Image (tube, rainbow, N blue to C red; front, side):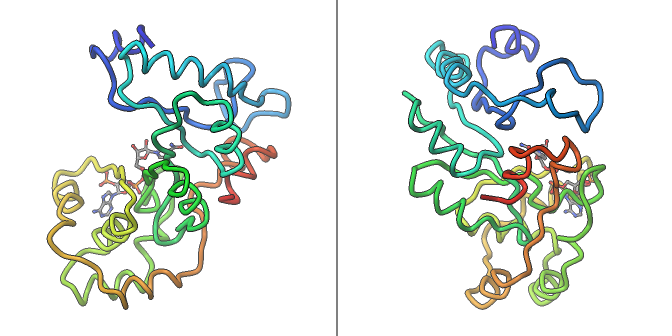
Length: 217
Ligand SMILES: NC(=O)c1ccc[n+]([C@@H]2O[C@H](COP(=O)([O-])OP(=O)(O)OC[C@H]3O[C@@H](n4cnc5c(N)ncnc54)[C@H](OP(=O)(O)O)[C@@H]3O)[C@@H](O)[C@H]2O)c1
């Protein structure tokens, strides 16, 4: 972590996360990886290291990403400092209601990645922005479909990280305050068929732990 901060030319980071609940047993240059390469994380020793980073002031907050409720239970049973957040894929087509409720009950904040369904990226698709219900709501409110998706995430009490290399779209994406989705609009979005964008099994390999993440448990 000291080296990481040095490379970033920072004294500390605001939030330090475990990316996913497994590790690779060797350096990998490509994915998917074979059975035996993807190994379980020794969560106790890894989390002790994370807690040490916080104690040393190198990370203001520590958390996890792509953890299921069972994995969070395991972590909470050994943690001295509970994870501040769980970063998960959350968007109108992958709402993760049960897991979000679990996190809320345990005081773990949820941050959404791929809130636009990673449209146009090498691992994403255009399904979220191509959803007719979202497009119709956008039209009726004079907003863009992306703004409707982002506002929906925000109104769930979920913080979000979206990414754009385009200045106009960056401005659009920050302009989701001062207006809101109505109860009827929220209700309509809540009934959308669910479909995860990022299927880790097809990226990392069809390992059990990876399938659990993909199932949104
Ligand atoms: N923890 C994890 O396992 C995990 C997994 C995936 C992603 N992430 C992180 O989450 C962050 C965001 O996720 P993401 O990049 O996958 O997905 P995203 O924000 O849902 O989608 C980004 C894509 O949407 C496009 N876009 C952005 N704003 C738009 C708009 N207003 N209208 C139309 N298209 C728009 C971008 O293209 P332009 O650049 O051309 O605008 C880009 O191709 C990243 O920092 C990523 O590293 C974390």
